[in-house]
Image (tube, rainbow, N blue to C red; front, side, top):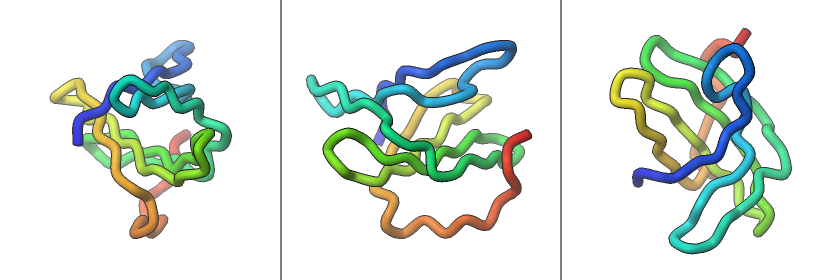
Length: 81
């Protein structure tokens, strides 16, 4: 599902996700458990204020975010530098 994600950015876009919007509710990211990238996307495995673990993915070419429940995520990709 496409998502609205607030991020902290320094010299590059999306250094760290800060919050995710679920309909009208803003869910603050309380913990970034893991982050990685593949050639086309940035990925973040996060915990949010309501206790859920989410997988956030930013598509670099399409310029959009997606969000999924993270219960099925296996960390296999390389870490972000």
